[in-house]
Amino acid sequence: MDFKFFVRGHTKNACDRGIGQIRNHMARVDFWTVDDVVENVAAVANSSVVKRVAVEDNFFRDFKSVLSELYKTLSAVQKYHILNANKESSGVIMCRTSPDDAGISEDLRRNIDKVKTPSSTVALMFERSLMSLTPPQPNAEKIDQMHRKVRPIVPSEFQNDPLYEAPTADEAA
Image (cartoon, rainbow, N blue to C red):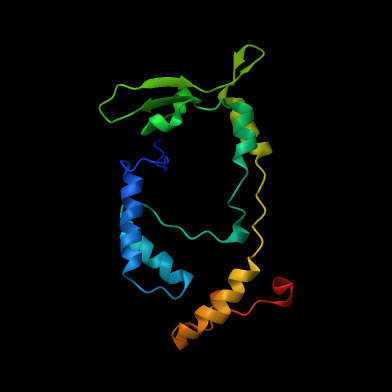
């Protein structure tokens, strides 16, 4: 499995280029609803799958506590551009600075009673210990700003979108 993610200060990764293309496209198009954003990002991101995730889906989980218990921190992660992991060697990461680099293997599994963490323990921990993250509270200031300042300049056919609704009494408090 290849993961694509951002490493601060590095712009050589394919995901950085993809995000740049999306950003450039979004600067030239008007978006009035969240669905507009999703559709346009999907059109530009032809090498990636775009999926809109609702807050109610309980999609976001607290991986940090489980992963920090099972694995060590990768030292000097900032100097690597390409990190590969595969299912056969769970917990072992191949780190490379460029595609031509031979790379080094880092075993991040923790020792429990002088035994490396087995894959079965990882699967069990993921099954039992991953907790859903609570959704962030709505930002009342942003909701008010969207309603008072942005809604008046939005075309009339989009003004009833939930994005531009007036803040409720609970949100305003």
